[in-house]
Length: 211
Image (cartoon, rainbow, N blue to C red; front, side):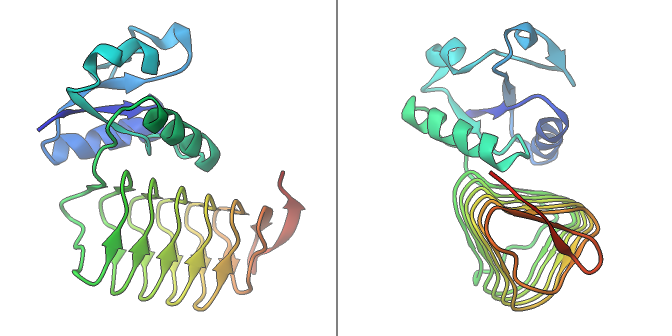
């Protein structure tokens, strides 16, 4: 089994490392674009630098791109990693999470402990589903989405590319969450959310357009 290298070295990357410890994956290091981070040791794992610093390891490792929560940054890291010819890590699923044969998982995603996926759930590429989230039947979670801890999503919901669903928020059934939108923590979403908008509150209301 090839060793893993995780993009990022912040809080979420450290949680991915924790998941890897629990799942018996060996982590060779973190990646970070900031030159001042290279060589630091975080949770016992070295920061190896940027992609150009690990070319000699290209055939020995797989890279976890979903080590950062920001969807746009996650997408950039994924594209740069694939363009550089590195192998993407398989989707990492905490051992406590049951994946039904009726669910489909893309590549490079991270599904954390306590998550519930019921039936006919489609999870795209480079998705983060954080701790103790509840994803109901017939949902589609598109590429680069980040779902915060403790999120509840009703059935027949589509979450568009790059959307960010904040911690502890709830989305009622049969809702569409637009691409690159942002749902604030603790929100209750009862209506469709347009692309590139921020919604927050109970019930969730439009706050602003996002570039």
